[in-house]
Amino acid sequence: MSPLPVTLSGVERSLMHGPLPCAYSLPGETPSVAGPQPHTETSPDIDVEEKLKGAFARGWSVLVWNDPVNLMDYVVYIFKTVLKMNEQDATRHMWEVHHQGKSTVARETREKAELLVHRLRGFGLNATLEPT
Amino acid sequence: MICEQLNSTTWRLSFSESEAGFIINILARLARHYLQDPDEMPPALRAYWQGSIASPQQPLTSELRESQEMLSDSRAELRSERLNLAEKWIREFEISENRDPWRVEISSEERDEFVAMLNDRRVTLALEMNISHTDMEADPSHIAEKTRRSAILEIDVLGHFILVALGPQIYRP
View 1 (spheres, rainbow over the protein chains, first blue to last red):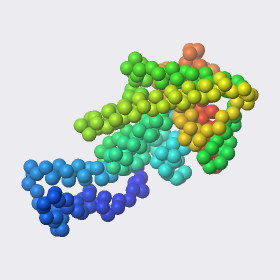
View 2: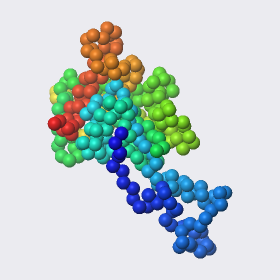
View 3: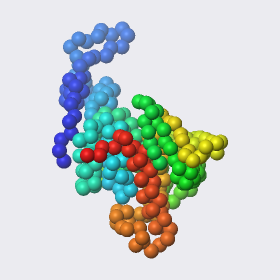
View 4: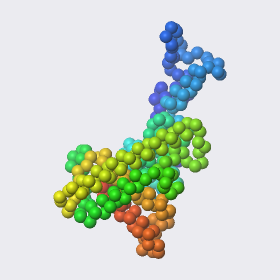
């Protein structure tokens, strides 16, 4: 499978690979300008940090699976409409679904990937989600 | 059937009297289908309407279970919205004075919904009849079982309507 043209912003890259770029403080606390402090394993901040990383990382793949009914031209139109692909990419992914049984059509945050699965399924395509 | 783009957001679909009769019949069948509780449907149709957020090979983690519930809710909402649209078009057909051709002017979003609903009928018919790739590639006249042959022909005809409705936007090199 050829790589997808996915680009990550600096913020998303740092969320995936490094500490959060900002620190949050509660009322009465002195905000830290040096970024997050080291945590112990039991700190609830770790959960929050992990959830934030999970929410913003493009760590979820949207897959479309082959089926006997959906028309090729229809699938190309849906990829263009829902996934905002150009004609060439939409056609390439349609053929990948047709010949290989499935195609990874997007890598997104979980929320966005879920939305894409809902929309693709709304058009009758067999789309699923999986962590990358 | 003819599909014309009137402006950037409006489309006009024109049906001959027999095409309109066919489409209204399909919309009435769809309306009955959308009204049905998925729990009372055969397993393949129930699975289609509940939706599956992950492939069968993918273990359902707590995150995916949550996503699965959201997908099922969104599929239920979709059926309800499409039921309203089907009923609206049937009503418009019933009160229309000129049915040859029968013309409807719809937005781009409604056209996408119309096409997706015709596709719902194709997919649900295929699931109901357990229609495979081999069936779809076969010459329908060679399929002995009458109900199966009719289903495949209906899927083909609806495919033609979908392509005509999308015609102006389908790439034809």
